[in-house]
Amino acid sequence: MKIILVTILLTCFQLYGLNIEEGMTKIFTISPGEKFSDVLKITNEKEVPEEIKLYQTDYSFNHEGGKQYPEPGTLPRSNAKFITFNPHQVMIPPETTIEIDYTIIFPDSLEDIPLTGTFWSMLMVEGITQGSIESESFDPDSEEPRMKMGISFRYAIQMITHIEESGIRELNFMETKIVNEEDGKFLQIDIENTGERYLNPSLSLEIYDSNGMYIKKLTANSSRIYPQTSKRFKIELEGIKSGKYQVLIVADAGGDDIFGINYTLDIRK
Image 1: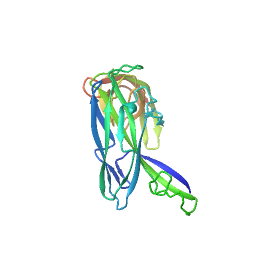
Image 2: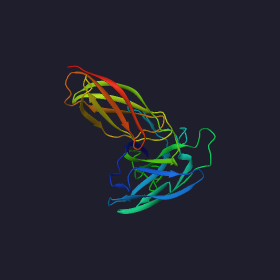
Image 3: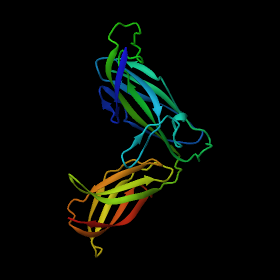
Image 4: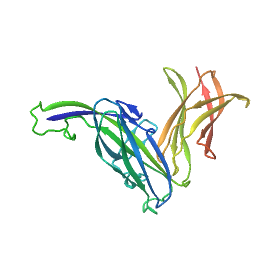
């Protein structure tokens, strides 16, 4: 039997009958040499069994929208090799919650980079199509048609580990420009994390006229940025008339982690 699968990646935690309890992001603060164990709870809310498999990948992205899921342990700050879990494949009965045991053990030091800042990877939970070669229900002697179409849903759980409070916190403003889109005019701000620790900045834009008089403040939603990744933020320039302005762009990641640049805003009709 030949199986054709279409895989859809899901970043929300309750779709298609599976519920990943406590969300799709797990954040831990750990010390070098420390061992931490916990469970991942997955509920099958459907009235039929659901078979799943679990595996790891690394994860990276950039401000242009590109996302990569390389092999686990590929990226310098991958924590995949420090995480073990069991089982790797399981059939979940209808309306039942199962527990996946996982353990995180960091070494005392690393050879390639300092053991500071943030390390991360993905734990994928992927549905297995009934009757496929991977499924427990696969029958190699079946006389059913050799071609079968299936859809596999994949849930991506971000596994984030901070090494205590260590790591350089640093953001770089890459490029800032005005863009016109169908739903309005926006200030587009590309930011990269050039430090060692994950940051989750929210952006604000303080606007002043040519005489330095304050006009208004605009904001954008916060967004997670890992080391060596970048994100694109957009702030709608709603209610700002044509003209030249001086603006202060602030990326506030909480506490003392505040970054900013001055920018001349030239809005034209």
